[in-house]
Length: 336
Image (cartoon, helix red, strand yellow):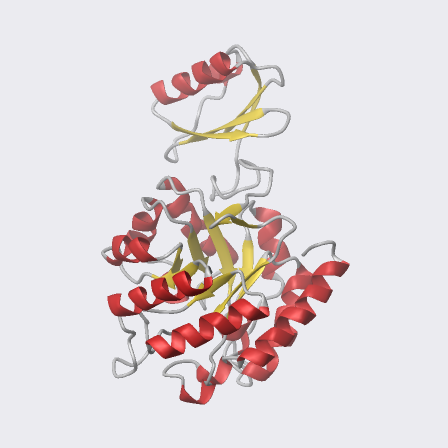
């Protein structure tokens, strides 16, 4: 349920309504708009008697939230959320571009990649220190040493870092080094990890599972939001279908649908969506045209030598071309 306050409601009246809601055993989420304040009422699945709040001073009306994802819903939060990433907002007119290698492999590799994506126009650096792999014999990442190298790359370039945490225990460690914590597709429904991310003070990039519905993605985001972390960014990265010519099938439909359902920013990962570098730029352009708030792209200075995902990684010069092309698409839509 949401409680819509009157336009002229005072701070004291808003505080009194919040106190009354919490006294009734519910939690609140305060949303301050340009014209009025909305109080989100959050609890379990018990029906809420709205009449007990409708007569309070300063209240305009109450409305039920019918979506199961309460905090992520536009019913609760009609305005777009902008998530700051080291001063750069993700969402709104500016399109974020996060780029870098799938995994941190060496000091020379990550520093070269960071400098290359910085020069091409990236707003943040991605790179995995912990890697969930299908095979237990594949490269699993450099662990904390990889995080330290990412921090060094940030010092050298000024780019904020986006990297993945794979378990609840890793969240504090990753948060110590990273500017944004990624929860990968394989962990989208790792509820203990989502709860841990909800307690973190770092923004969270949540990727859609390869066999997950849009509603399941939004319900996973709800875990993070309910934990107290409002800085959540969603990412469409392709779903598994019967098609064999690409690694996954990029669900371009998901971008406008998610943006209709939720106030949270939405990114597109064209690299995992197709799995082949030669198609990445075309899908990236399509994502921007569909309304994505940003891209996360795999870029490696020497893809043939990559320890993971080399086939879908762009060389720096190809990434620079992608950025130029996406700028042109964004300009048509009045974005930058």
